[in-house]
Amino acid sequence: MQRKNKADEAAKAAFLKKVAALWPVARGTVSLVRKPCSRKACRACASGERHPALIFTCRVGGRGRCLHVRKADEALVRRATENCRKLEALLAEEGVRLIGSLREADAD
Ligand SMILES: [Zn+2]
Image 1 (cartoon, rainbow, N blue to C red):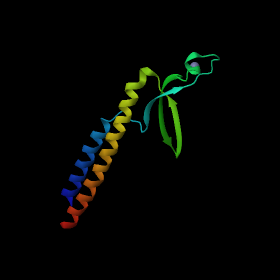
Image 2: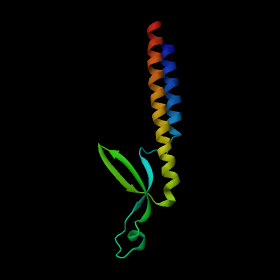
Image 3: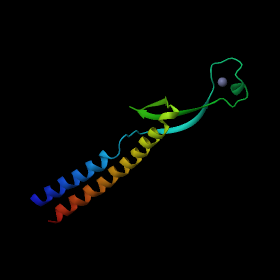
Image 4: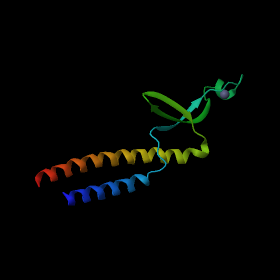
C-alpha cells in the first residue's frame, strides 16, 4: 500500500508539472471574420468586403461568448487555445492511467 501511495504521488507530481507548462490556457476558437462598421458610405461595407476582425469564441456556463482579439495578442491567444487542446489530451491520458493503476491495485 505504501508503494502504491508513492506511485500515486509521483503520478500527481508528474501531471502537475505538465499542467504548469500549459500556460496561458483558454478553451475557445480564434477566427478571422469580416464585420460591417457603423460608418455611412463605407466602400468596404458597400462592396460586401467589410472589415477583417479577429474574434475569440467560447462557451461560459452554457452561454456563447464572442470577444474581440487585438492583432498584437493573436499569437498569445492562439497558443492559449493550443494549450487547451494539450491539457484536454493530458486529462484523457490521466483517466486511462488512473483506471490502469486501480486495476493493478486490485491484482495485488
Ligand atoms: Zn465599413
